[in-house]
Image 1 (cartoon, rainbow, N blue to C red):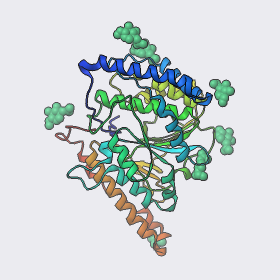
Image 2: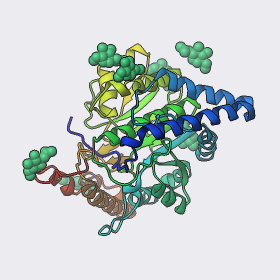
Image 3: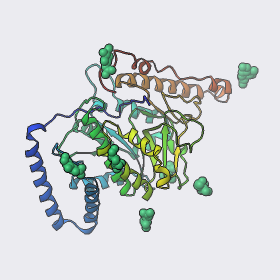
Image 4: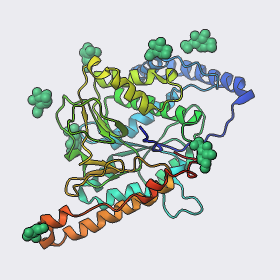
Amino acid sequence: MDNNHPKLKIHYHSLLGSKSNNIALIIFLFLTVTVILSLFIWSPPYFSIFQTQQIIQCSNPSNSTTGFEMTPKINIEDELELALAKASMGNKTVIIVVINRAYAEQDLKGDTTMLDIFLDSFWLGGEETRKLRDHLLIVAVDQTAYDRCQFLRLNCFRLETDGVDFRGEKLFMSQEFIKMMWRRTLFLLDVLKRGYSFVFTDMDVMWLRNPFERLSKNETEDLQISTDMFFGDPWNKNHLINTGFYYIRSNNRTIALFDKWYSMKDNSTGLKEQDVLLGLIRGGIIDQLGLRVRFLDTKYFSGFCQDSKDFKAVTTVHANCCRSITAKVTDLRTVLKDWKRYKKIMSYKRFANNVNVTQTFKWTGHWGCWSSWKVGNNKTSN
Ligand SMILES: *[C@@H]1O[C@H](CO)[C@@H](O)[C@H](O)[C@H]1NC(C)=O
Ligand SMILES: *[C@@H]1O[C@H](CO)[C@@H](O)[C@H](O)[C@H]1NC(C)=O
Ligand SMILES: *[C@@H]1O[C@H](CO)[C@@H](O)[C@H](O)[C@H]1NC(C)=O
Ligand SMILES: *[C@@H]1O[C@H](CO)[C@@H](O)[C@H](O)[C@H]1NC(C)=O
Ligand SMILES: *[C@@H]1O[C@H](CO)[C@@H](O)[C@H](O)[C@H]1NC(C)=O
Ligand SMILES: *[C@@H]1O[C@H](CO)[C@@H](O)[C@H](O)[C@H]1NC(C)=O
Ligand SMILES: *[C@@H]1O[C@H](CO)[C@@H](O)[C@H](O)[C@H]1NC(C)=O
């Protein structure tokens, strides 16, 4: 599977190395004091939340020599509860997107960011998608991304990893990149445990229509996940999943799935979490846990690996099968141009019902992404 889309580009200014023992000591003391204080101060409901966190930590003892644990700080917990409640739809459903500086801040040469393009798609999608903006929860892994999110008056949550700031760029699949991925998985497990179902979306997914109209409402379906290639049968477990877009319901089975997924953290050297989940599926986890997993059709949940041929049906477009952020930005802007062109034509009545016009509508080639695979273009990101 050559689907090396960058979930995040992460750079992290190392404060580890020789100082790691000191930092470990400080963090340990800090946690101890916080724990003791919280025993005295906190009322029973918070106490039980705290216990849940401890269980996560105990069942996944990480042999971290770097001096920080993957467990969220306790005082962040109620902030998360607030953020979730604020972003939630009536039925305890939110849309989660994780952002870092590389996606939020313009570099010197750029004139837009992935975050801008992502939000543009909600605007261009029309009434249906505009209202979904209120239900977006932007999870910022560094301060710059958080500030930008606040500036745009979105629902923002700052995800910290005990004092470590995942700033700026980091090479794809580096140690820190993978650490961030797993931190994210733990966070999502936490959200499920709090009883929230969610759509997880990468920022390089354009929301052209309201996906809730296309996702199955059948409550027996635990997970509905996008694919790079769709083979025709939504229950065929051999699909190449893409964790860039999925809808998951909070229940025992899905919590068990994410628990298992996260527990592979220390046992999956060199693999990104998407490949680990794919491995679990190949290993039969779906049947073991009694999960119902629907694999989504690219006709609706499209991507650069396999374009939807149907403009009347397409709901989201993911810049997968693409190697660099610059290429994604270029090609996604073209996607939005195509979409505007389509909407314009549809606004003329005599074309709207002409099957010939709608059927011959095609996406412009994803030239940036295609050429991002050429030799010599392999230096960084993804
Ligand atoms: C942690 O590492 C030590 C030595 O490297 C090993 O003996 C121990 O089993 C590890 N613990 C866990 C939980 O992996
Ligand atoms: C949750 O509520 C929203 C808004 O009312 C709706 O669009 C969506 O389909 C609901 N989700 C489920 C799973 O019922
Ligand atoms: C949901 O799916 C199950 C399994 O296919 C089916 O038995 C049930 O009738 C469906 N429920 C609804 C409301 O469609
Ligand atoms: C699932 O959760 C319910 C509570 O919501 C609990 O009563 C039940 O025992 C759980 N089932 C399993 C298999 O864990
Ligand atoms: C971790 O990997 C080892 C060796 O590859 C294997 O024996 C063990 O079962 C794995 N643990 C889990 C939880 O999959
Ligand atoms: C669509 O195209 C076919 C030939 O390609 C033509 O016969 C037909 O009349 C066209 N339909 C409309 C509605 O223009
Ligand atoms: C990147 O491409 C250069 C040639 O342009 C090649 O020498 C190098 O090995 C490649 N690096 C990787 C990681 O593929």
